[in-house]
Image (cartoon, rainbow, N blue to C red; front, side, top):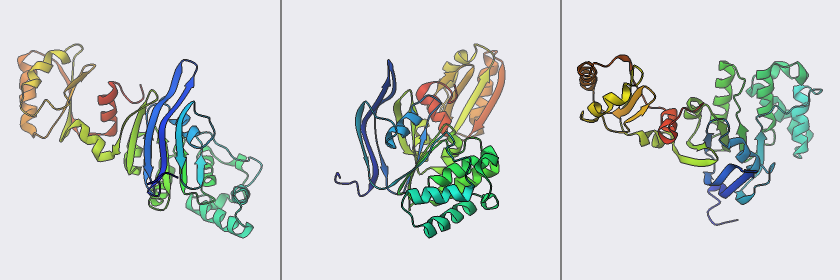
Amino acid sequence: MNKGLAEIALRVEGLTKRYGDLVAVDQLSLEVRRGEILGFLGPNGAGKTTTLKMLCGLLRPDAGRIELDGSVGVSPQEIVVWEGLTCQEQLEFCGQIYDLPAAEARRRAGDLLEAFGLQEKARALAKTLSGGMLRRLNIALGLVHRPQLLFLDEPQAGLDPQSRVLVREYVRALAGEMTVVVTTHDMEEADKLSDRVCIMDRGQLLVMDTVEGIKGQLGEGDLYEIELAAGEAEALRPHVEGLPGAREGLSVQGDTLRFTSTRDSALLTEILHAVDRQGLTLEQLRLRKTTLEDVFIRLTGRGLRA
């Protein structure tokens, strides 16, 4: 084991996977600290699931190195349960696969059923559960043996809002005692859950930092979005560039001019005057806090789900 891995639960160097001419994962390198929750973010097709399968040993990489320190638990994006077993039975069975004594596996199964709101379904066959219940059971199966490193692939897919909060709070409570890597395309959820996040697109790692650190790439202040009639955003741009405090991250996305600023409502007044002087048509003007998706748009020039 390399020096320093006592503080690092997972180290990846130059990880690469190709499918013909498609490079699904392109020279990925990162380190995950022991006890942290890392949000692994990106749109569908970014390479998140392919990366996770390689980290779990389910897919052989074409190049690169993976170092894991500790036992591993996995909850895949696809629901993997035994339909003919009850919830209690399959959690106990999974525990015994990992060499837990029968009594301990039984206790652990009961604890997880309660934690994920499935205690009333303990004796129900998996094939009778709703999609949300199956997702929660799928996550619980990855936790039976108390792994030191847990991989969750889109764990909140198909969950209702109440179940999303339940899963999020449980995973958040694992911070410090278990290292968790969560893949998702829901940046709002990752914002609430993660200690650090990395954003991936087209197989490449774009950025990795704390949530606030990544948001800070857009500059300090709030995000201004000025939506104009078709073709008018570029016409307004040079006039906004000349306003004090309005140049940070200035860009045009479609018919919307975007930038961040720490200035107050006086800037809005100046923008409205510029729109009026140029004879442009203002459709919407929005002022809000920056989000992770704003950073993604800044990095890639397109929306997260595009």
